[in-house]
Image 1 (tube, rainbow, N blue to C red):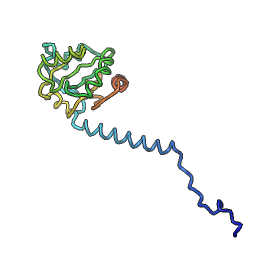
Image 2 (image 1 turned 120 degrees about the vertical axis):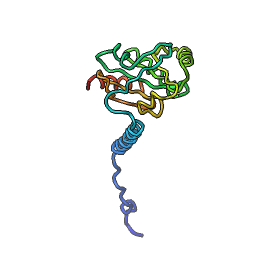
Image 3 (image 1 turned 90 degrees about the vertical axis):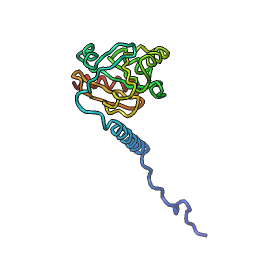
Image 4 (image 1 turned 30 degrees about the horizontal axis):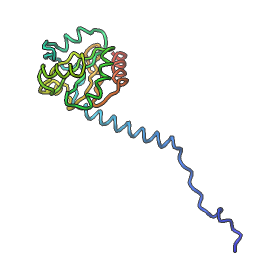
Length: 184
């Protein structure tokens, strides 16, 4: 028998990296992937002035981007693209409705039918949104959008400052509008 202590001959474990460092790297990678996806989805969105349009509203009237922005001068505005068949859009309705209480938001019903259909959907869901009807998706295409929901934030000069596709929290919507107000 040897008098050697078995514990002293065991390999010494390498020191573990701090857990916070691993988490920070994982969060950083996740954010990079998320930002890359957002950039890729918005790759066709034009820079600079928002594309002008004139279109029918769900209530039967007509509006243009210039007229709508003229009714809300001096600050940032948002154009929210949605569809009645989109479950993510439906999940985001409360956030958009809340933001629209404090900021000018023009909504665009993309590929959701004609004005009567869109008006009925708005009434069924209890939404009192000024809504442009984009029955064939042509307006969304002019903005370079390939899906919904999408939020386009314009600064006071009518330039596109932010585009987000997919679900965005109410805080995220408000933060984009607030930021557009600061940089214009």
